[in-house]
Length: 90
Image 1 (cartoon, rainbow, N blue to C red):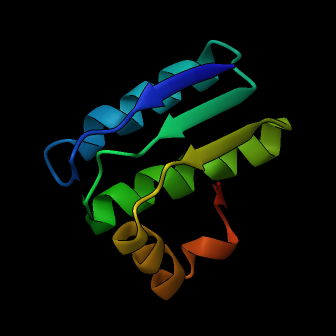
Image 2: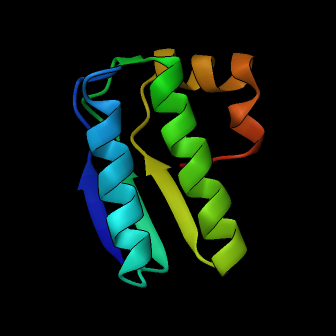
């Protein structure tokens, strides 16, 4: 299990770094990734795609990615966009 923390904003600048970090963990064989989103108060569509892509790969490999400490404003975005049913949010 590996835990990572996200930044305050997951946008066009920071999302590619998050995406690369998640891909690197998956490529190394990590089967459980915990993403601490306590500080995150903004997520763009690029950030949503990074999480969707990572979740899809984790599902295929039998692993799991869990989003923890998700702020209500971000949870609402996940729900409105349909990601709430795809991502594991604690």
